Amino acid sequence: MSTKTILKKSSITFLEKYLNNASPTGYESEGQKIWMDYLKPYVDTFITDNYGTAVGIINPEAPYKVVIEGHSDEISWYVNYITDNGLLYVIRNGGSDHQIAPSKRVNIHTKKGIIKGVFGWPAIHTRNRSKEETARIDNLFIDIGCSTKEEVEKLGVHVGCVITYPDEFMILNENKFVCRAIDNRMGGFMIAEVARLLHENKKKLPFGLYITNSVQEEVGLRGAEMITKTIKPNVAIVTDVCHDTTTPMIDKKIEGETQIGKGPVITYAPAVQNNLRELIIATAEENKIPFQRNASSRVTGTDTDAFAYSNGGVPSALISLPLRYMHTTVEMVHQEDVEHVIQLIYQTLLKIENNANFSYFK
Image (tube, rainbow, N blue to C red; front, top):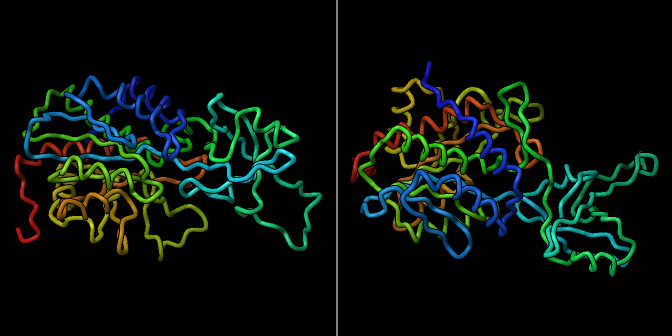
């Protein structure tokens, strides 16, 4: 059995507050404030950039720099068009799933505060059953209870307002965490817990540790792309989510086989530096931390790619948290997997030496 990181009650309180807060792509600031406030006792200083990426640093004077990273943004919608009779049409902000939208409640973020609304949908009685319409971007609309465009605008709603779902954190069957935006604020939570463990266990690292919570991953890894040029790290360990492929309607021959409750997922991909990945695997085996393997074709689709191909090439690796129902409002992970990802990153950091050489030809 592996030594698990038992999450404190205060950790779960932080996780719930952090997940329940809206942090849509491009508007991550309030979530970043919550994250930085939690992390503050465990780091020496912070840096932030012009778009909102936040980095807590341990040993900021050290020349050798190691990044552990997650991303802080969540998928959302933008108001794109307001009809004369007060209905709102939308476009995506990130990879929002149009199929889950009908009948969902929403929060529209305005300068006057949150305006409530719903994604309307025709009643089953009124639809043409011989040719059922499916949800599409061009037929999704939001109703906020107004009958004119002027009423909508009086509430402070305009084109460009961002829209999120209000679904909040819950625990199923004692050990399954469920919420929207677990992709990937759980990553920010896990790297913050690594910092807490280092502090509470009085571990002194021989290098600078940059605990990085990037913005705008959901629209092209943009936050990581910017911050890696600022930090100029020597090593990057990224954590994100991947699919539990054991639920219905997923083809394992295409997606591979990974499952919640069976441990962190270590990725094989061109962007993943082989020697760093093997160090992570050896660490898992040495500490009896269960893990799974996954292969990614061409790109990982995570901030790993942004770090790996920056600054002339940064040795980078990806440790993923298996998740069910990605990009829905009921994303689900297993508490033991969360604990094991934290433990794996923590134990790997203890094995990295100052000026560690991960050369391809080592």
